[in-house]
Figure 1 (cartoon, rainbow, N blue to C red):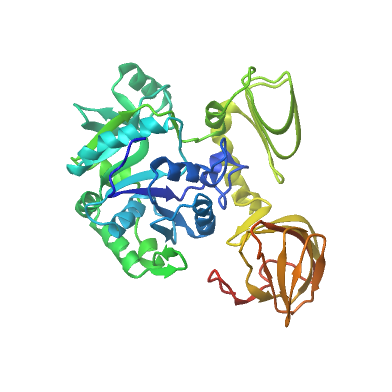
Figure 2 (tube, rainbow, N blue to C red):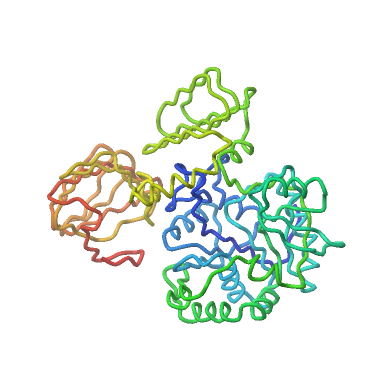
Length: 463
């Protein structure tokens, strides 16, 4: 495996929403945090690709999931930086550069891309290192395999020079690029010195750089995260690194690479990147297919039977089903927009809600009750809390629970249960080395998530 310099820092940008892979990907658990076609999530694959200690930039809602996924890999990040609001990639990279040593090389990567040939990727990065050391801002260009209108293009100049960057073209323009040669897909992966990037940003967008400095100076540590100050960061006009710097600098360079790259930007792209059977199908989960060709059928928690269909995407989760022609799968985001406009929770989250201690999934609910399936990770604990309007029954399914209820602390094991009266101070902990799973039945005049008074919380949450 190609070795990288010790002063190279992987910077992973993990701020995307991934709406084009709805209903599997939601705003609160986007595609980079999912296992799409391997045993690792896209974020984990990105982190493993470099082998170094990464710096990750993410948002408030994803911070604990990001930290947990890195912990699963025994990876100690240099920093996990929390953006108070999304401001695109240029400010995210600026903050990373300000946190690094001036001469450090930043290898900037989106968290939601797939690279099948990791050795080719690492060879390309090694090829780019001397260019970056010499003060160039290096991007990596993918040899196009089709006239794709979903990517930006880079027109090559002499050697590693960039003649120009091109916006996402229409179909005829993209076809002309592929026919002419000399054009590469813009993968959105970069390598440069931290100081080189900051100097360019100071030249072209000094106000943005100043706002990033203020957000860092006024920011604060929060557990094992660094939280940027909201006021200066939210006040700036965000831009992508391409618009803000790469299209303006005279130091741009491009290294071509064929590494089996995809941004997994649609269901048809995921179908293309997944292992297909003799009929061209990708069948995942409990699927029965008869006379089906060139389809992607995914069943997450139920049986799906498909008969006599072709070129379709069928994705069934526990709360939504998508059926789409592959030729129109870019329109999935329109469905999400309609859900948002209607105030539907399915636009942003599934039935499973993630917390720093694990997750819970609503199984059933009514006017005065709610039934949850809860998992508490090994060694984790919920806040010491109470509820004014509901009581709770807990039944342990697997694992061991350490329960605080009023002035008593006791242990529950598989098939044992307890009752938490309304208004009683309580806490649930998992003292074991395996996940704790339990069923919680809430009952009372109000069972909303906001009926909670946190008295002590290991994760710094209030209310």
